[in-house]
Length: 422
Image (cartoon, rainbow, N blue to C red; front, side, top):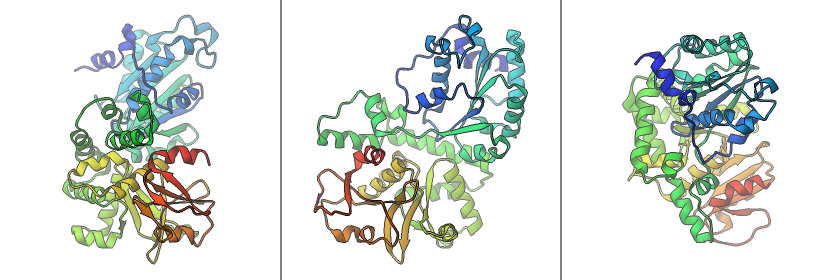
């Protein structure tokens, strides 16, 4: 198909067809607030997380009466004559083309004077363009009247370009749905703790928008996403050759989330050299399939050298290895890592705290999915060798435990709300 045909297919708003979306992610308002800033908006995150929909919702907003009445978005002289053809969307996942060729054809097709007036350029899955950062920088510097919004599913390619875009870019990580978003997209109302827990268990298997609003088989859907990332995205972007080994590493992490991985041990087990294994783990991490946690130390160099923990990047990825899934306590750990965007745990000589979080790294979290808890279950949280402002035990609503002055007990579905209140 010719590039011109692709332009029209990807931009139905040019011919009066709108984008009718009823559900908006929590982050949408923040993205709208950045549309008048002279900076590139970068949206990165896993496949199928909703980046493309967010871009089209921003286009929908730009074409709305609300945007037309906002002087920061449109100049007074432009408000009554919004030209839909000044807004271009292009996906490089669907059609590989040079962005300069896309802009040139756009200009010629509608006889646009790209140096005058405001223009909005939405470039989706930009990481598939060779030297994309350099090209985006040229576009940004050449057309100061362009508002650029770019997206990518593999963060490494976007991060690698960040140096050349320093001072020009605002980067947003688009995550899978939160539990509150899941409830909102399904118009669900929580009437009791039992109902909340049942909904939450469903949510853990359906954290991507398409799963949340349909009866799609979550196992097949996740398998398709992971397989495309492992067999297509990662080899293309990271020069990875042994796809079977890459898949094996991911499956191991899904089956044993939160295990401390020593590179020398795993490389021996898989028959790989350490440098190659480290490269494969990095590719999985940068592609939003796994999350790496550092062993906390007051000395940053120690944290870097110590063995790391790995979890699936979000909880629904556990569906990939069904029926070989870990017990629920491990899945709950993955969920806490996801909810908190954790980067640290603490382990010394077998003494461990599951997560160390917070801007000051002063919140300790232990995940204990048991019917009955005693202080021996979290003694290292009580006796941490460093200062903690909050000591949290994440558990289930029916858990039985004594009250302790030093610790706070939080039900798993309530953790995000609880953390926002402290």
